[in-house]
Length: 103
Image (cartoon, rainbow, N blue to C red; front, side):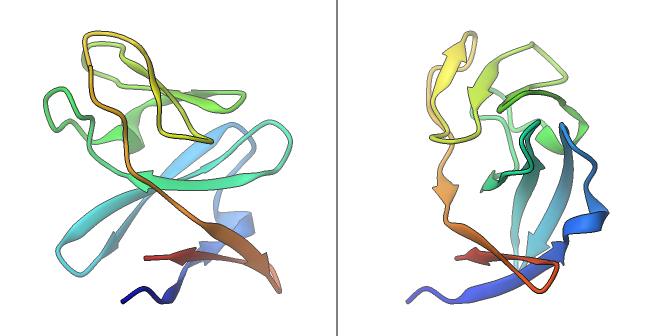
């Protein structure tokens, strides 16, 4: 069963930046792209479980800080190896200055 979870304030994330969001025993990331869109995905790289919250956001992509795999924030698709599995993504919406994630 899914639910909308209050993840953070929109002001918590600068454009082209990322923050870590933990819920229960799981780790996620919230990314704000260059056009003020917000995305949520699993927070660990699919290559070696490195925290993506330390990664580099460029437009709507995030680069893993360890081996430089790049993922599309919109779909979770890996576009640059060594990762070969996509990230799982989650629906987001903004209400009253808060980012909500459907988990």
